[in-house]
Length: 320
Picture 1 (cartoon, helix red, strand yellow):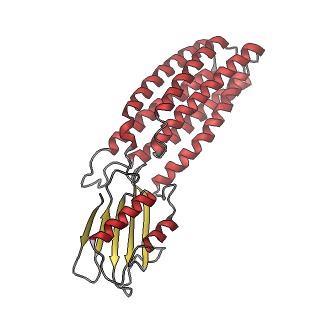
Picture 2 (picture 1 turned 90 degrees about the vertical axis):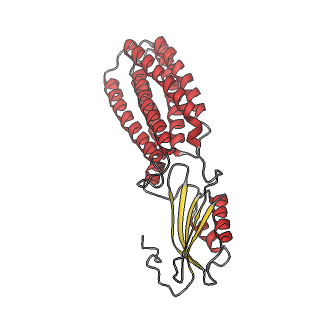
Picture 3 (picture 1 turned 135 degrees about the vertical axis):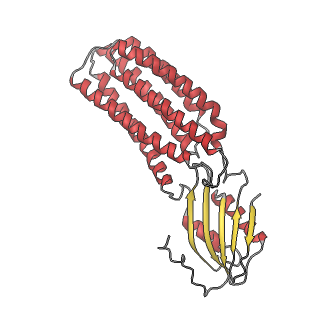
């Protein structure tokens, strides 16, 4: 149930704080249930990196080496994402009053940036190899890549249930992208085996890298927006404003702010103008419950102003 606090300071208008802490749609700790998925995913990907790195070097396949490098970046990304989920579960402190929940946002941003950097390096090597094609051991490439495809697919499946959390979604997309990369390497090895066109190896590597970049751009955009306190996707500020104005006794509102405090939790603050007088606790609890139910906003703080003549310094929308 939401915990509501009504503070009166003896002046004409007081400050009403409504904090929602129920573990429902607005307060989902998805990462907490993904510890095993992270452990399994990291273990499987370390095995993939070692096998693809060794056999890629022995078979002289830049596509298989690119796949190994991509998987190595995912191992690091998974470690960072797992660490972020553990930090997000730490309790608040006097300095970090929201705890370290926002570390999940930083991890998602880092994963997107790191993946793009890794793809850039691998693309450079593929371009170099495209200009100077070299023979590859097609059968070995196909077998090792097929194993990697299956293991990455299994890892992606482990993270498939965390779509609302951009951090978990990042891990899911990474694993899914790796499975696609490995499938492309298998296809390239088979085509080279049939045709002898060794230039297909770096060409397929470049094509796969382009697909990965395309798929990663959305993650990078979303995590960058969250790190800048943008309103999370799926929440329409206009609808939130209308919902608050629809509450009984609310005539105007201003200083409305909606921002993420983690990849799964959203906070809101607003000043409500209520000329009929200061509301009771039931109003605060009902408003917090409505915001949680309709918009998945779980941390709500409302300041009530009972005089329309009061000139709040934060009333203009241009003031932050």
